[in-house]
Length: 353
Image (cartoon, rainbow, N blue to C red; front, side, top):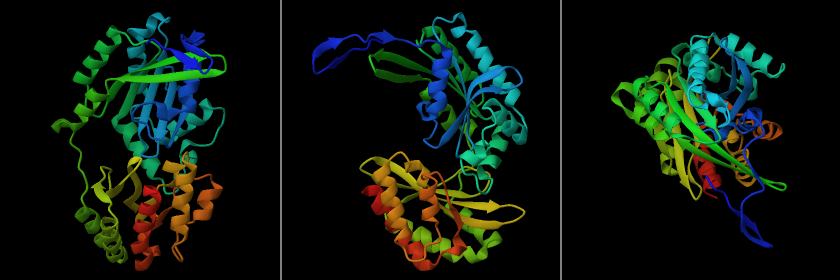
């Protein structure tokens, strides 16, 4: 891809330099900014040189839904970029397939020099992310990404073939990360190939995964947390009145995701899910503060709107102290009907601005 730049003092020109010094430089960028990878949310953490057992995977990414993405970086100057990179990423994925989640956590911490657990980084208070990651490791449900600096037809063909012959749970894409530098300014342009193929696989009948409905969630409440049932009904009605769309999740237990349209596009600031462990069984409500931690005005408007509700059990001060990294998930039975009626309106007002 050709790149031209200009400033106030000169016309269009080519940048002084292009490309990367080495593959490690590209790895570091994706480690520091994992949301550059298609399909990875803003709330994700990454690990470099993850020892899969078949070698060191360049970058492994975990997000708040427990989704796992394996990235292998190769530069055009590397003769492996055409074929061996495919074998490498598949080999790493096969070694991680059926890996115990505790072992996954240990390997992650060792790879990054004894850093904290990825589940701690993502504020996995109730183990929901760990459970999802455990299920994905057991089933081999990974996103496989080839990160290159120059996309060629051979790699495109291989990506097309792999998406045609692999199961819907495994998606394979390639992303070209074009890099240029001019003085103190650096430019990074991601161009993905294969995302449409992965989406088509996910939408196929073979990929069908149960989508929970509102009635499924309410039935779970009635059977497991009956005191929450009338509160959840109150909350769902208030969400709809405030303009939210409610979509069922696809996890192992019933869940509902709530979206609202804003000037910035569709946002998903509220979720409900069923939680069951040896210590607690409850229907929970979550305001997704971390999704907006990189938008200071929006996140503060959301915090102020929530904390203005008298007696609200959501610990907004704790969220601020964590730089909006905390995701408090509160049992529905801890709220009053009045609070649950007020919460959707407050969230909608903040999101819409």
